[in-house]
Length: 523
Figure 1: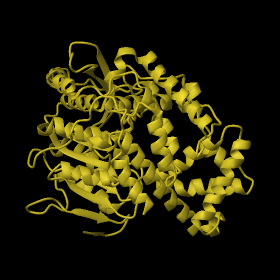
Figure 2: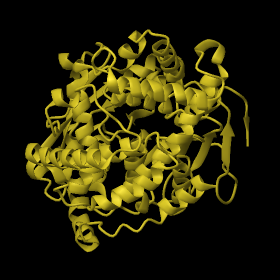
Figure 3: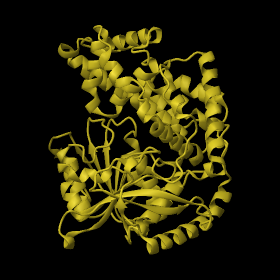
Figure 4: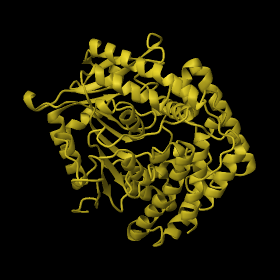
């Protein structure tokens, strides 16, 4: 199949223009940074975290308490500039003698905050976990809520609409996006200066260890989703003896060769399959949405709406770019399918209001969204080599867009500042532990997840011996822990409360467990 053949070619791309800091130089800094992490963690243990009422700007309920933890900007210089990360917490609600410590959660990004996570303890799926653990969220370095939020451009410019999003862009459009990517990279350098190079996944992992120490935990209980699985895997590699329990939900492929250029291309390919899943579902419910009873018919309606919005944006704000962004959300979450299908159906029938409501840029979120994009870009650009010649990007993405047009170029342009990045690039760490070095960890994945394709979960399972993988089959929602599949949630709860992982053979590697959403499991 062409898709399978293309995926193989992605894994063997020759990227002649990659630039990275010499491996030896990075390894030489490792000793200093390891020492700096130990120093920062010792200081955090002594200082602890003074939890008080949360800042008003966070708009959090009184049940949450907030504090700060200091981390070095540069772990090679632990006595240098410090950053303050905001931390939120709710205390365990069960008996004191049954408390198991602090449970830290990160939702991914890069650039996402989990400040509101402790509120999850009020949900039925999290009730027993909240009884046993203090639930802890935090704003990672650079994220709004930390002492030095990163920015790369005026937030008001970030939310301008309408915008275009061509499936097969012209040369003129590509040149405009190259110019925009260069300007964006320059904006990041202008705003952040010398601090820019310190926004990395390795530093996020080190920050996590300082947070562990500040919470008074000798070993960390942690759950990372999406990107949180990647720096969680880095943490497990760097600090295996500091791990108590770890959950990896919707896994980024940790293979250094995939970080980040190739993994983004693999993501675009996977989104094509999810886009087809959505169109098949809409076609199946043609009696409701009246967009045709085949995926091709749904696509035709979508393309017609896209063309109309290019000529006359809905509500003056929703153009092809906003339409695409809204429907990309359906690739992440099944819960969006009915809303998006309704918006498309209503627009086709002359009512643009649902689409305007769902897809319009939100000025109130501009600052947070721009900050999240800035942190995302800085971390991914700093983490790894990227092609510096746009001809490489153009060749690779033109080929990919022939079989995966839905997300390919939009994804490419979002990451294009990395081609012109002013800070040094690292070489990704080789993730992995030896058998018995790490306590059993739990991996959760959906077979048709597009944001973090399933092969990433298989790769992580190989690299962390003793891990156990629970798979939600024939499903594609991004982030499945605590999301309503009773089998998955039971395994998550059992692991966090007892340390028991499913599918462990008495000897040898673990088996993969597969479950259907809401149904009984089979292995």
